[in-house]
Each structure stands twice: as structure tokens, then as C-alpha cells.
Amino acid sequence: MVYIVGLLAAVLLVLTLVVLNRMSVFTKGFASAQDANTPGMANKINAALLPIVFLLGSAAGVWSFVEAAPKFLPSPSSEHGVHTDTMFWWFMAIVTTAFFLTSILLFVFAFKYQYDPKRRATFYPVNHRLELAWTVVPAIVMAIMVFMGWRVWRDITSEAPADAYVIEVTGKQFNWIARYPGVDNNKLGSYNYKLIDATNEVGIDMTDENSFDDVISNTLYIPKGVPVLLKIRARDVLHSVFLPHLRVKMDAVPGMPTKFWFKATKSTDEMKAETNDPKFEYRLNCTEICGQGHFSMKMNVVVLEEEDFQAWLKTQKSFLATNASYLDRVPARLKAKAMKYTESGSEEAPAEGEAPADSTASASAATASLR
Image (cartoon, rainbow, N blue to C red; front, side, top):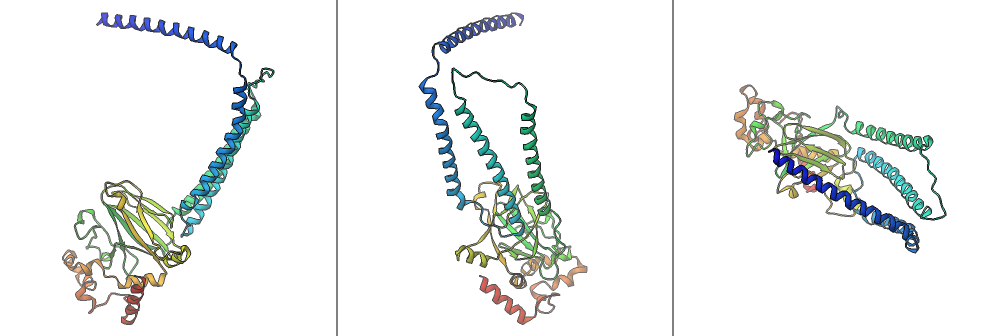
């Protein structure tokens, strides 16, 4: 082993000497070339190209921005979306201004101070005022931007209002499931992942009486002008809820429920008129790569006037009504109450708060018109 180490050391020493010799030859040749070849017309051409490149580059950047503008995020349809967009464009204005100022200085200084054999460089080893300026000014600007961002983030992540309507969205490979608390109250029933099966896809717990009137939907219906608390879950892997028009973006994490509250300001019908597109639809997309079918993981979203939303909700059958076999999982002491939400018990004992016959008929008509 000692001989091997010694041999390697000798080889390394020889290689080091060879490299040093090559470097000395190179530096001597470089120095002599510098003395022999002073910059001429090529240097002036390069200097003249600097402002041209800057102007062309700036024009190309502006054109690219204008051309891509129609493909930016659509106009916001929620209250907090207006605030986040305003903050975003303020930040873009600040960053763009800083970019153009520094770029102008960079190109102008390179052009102005191109090589001139008659000019002697002036060195400033220390300039406290300059160092203070380029340190304090950006720090103040960044502090203002952080404060603005914190205020908006504080508002949109605050606790939802007490009267917020609760909707649960669960992501699974590769679709979304919406659950509503029904018409009797604004309370979702409990859930348990151990209860998930082919029918009970979100694991509704039938031992909780708040679960009896829960409604399941494959389309997300949202009331306009009402605070909505979106409770977000994932059943298998990491997903992400993204409602671009409503500016809602929140990860759906297995085992760690998340939430986001917002208030929609434009109904689907209003957006159809605004965009002049009779086929317009709000959409919920998954923006977290979650497997081979990620590209197809989307959900139609319908924003309704509050009265139309309530009318739609009253026409929906509860999960228990469409899956009466789950009545066996209801505790004996709650069986009578649960029976009101099944097909057999709905006529004999309508749920509290259920609309009378004429009201239900009008609700059905409203829903039919929406479809």
C-alpha cells in the first residue's frame, strides 16, 4: 500500500509541474499578444451594437408581453382576486422598472466607457454613500413589497366568516368529489378514511347525525355573493385545487385537510355574457402532477345566484337517500331521524327546513333551466 501511495504522489507531482509549465507559456503568449494587438474598429463596432441590442431587446420584450397578455389569467371573479391581482401588477411594475433602470445603466456605461487609449481609469476603493444607496433603497422597496404581500395573504387566509357556506372538495386519482351539508343546517358530517368504499368514496360517517343530509355532487356548485369555506382533502396522493377565475389555489394533502374561503362575484351566466361565450364554464383543475391521469383531473364549476343555489340544493337527494343500505350503519338511537332522509321516509316525514311542494316544484324548474 505504501508503494502505491508513493507512486500516485509521484505521478501527481509530475502532472502539477506539466500544468504549471503550460500556464507560464500561455500567460507569456497572452501578454505579448495584448501588447501587439490593441483594440481597433472591431471594438467600436461592438460598442455601437450595445444600444442597438438593448433597444431591439426591449422592443421584443414589450411585443412578447402584449402578444401573450390575452393568455394571462382571466379577470378575477372573486373579491380577494381583485386584491391579489392588484398586488401582482404593482410588484410587476416595480420589478420591471428596476430591470430597465439597471439594464440602461449597464448598456450605457459599457458604451460610454469603451476602450480608449487616452483614458485613464479612476478607482474608488470605498464609497460609503453609494454602498448605502444600493443597499438601503432596495431594502426599503423589498420591505414595502413584503408588507403588502403579507396584508393580502393575511386577509385571504384568515378565518372564514361565521355565516360562510361550507363545501368539502376531495381529490382522488383522477377526479374531484364535492360534498354539501344539505338544507337542514350548514354542518358537514364527520368522515373516516376507514369507511371509504366503492360507493362511499369520501368515507362519510353515518354515526354522526350531521351526515344524514349530506349531498354528493360531481359538479361544484357555488353561491354568488356569499362567503364560501372550501374544505379540501385528498384521498390518495398530493393534489392541488385551482380555480383560476376565482383565484383559489390550495394543495390537497392526504391526512392533512386544508381550507380556503372566498366570495364569488360573478355567476356563470354573467360570465357567459361578459365573455360573449355561451359555452363558458368555470373549471376546477388539479395543478399537482398526481399520476398518469393528471391531465384529465378537472371538475366543472357552476356559480349561481344565491336563491338559485338554494333551489338547486333543495332538489338534491342526500347520500343516505340514494344509498339506503347505509342506514344499517346508523346507531339505533338515531335510526328514526335518519329515516327522514331515505326514500321511504322522505314523503312521510320531510326534513326540517325542506321546502313545501310548490316551492320544490319551482326549485326543480330553476334547476332544469340551469341545465
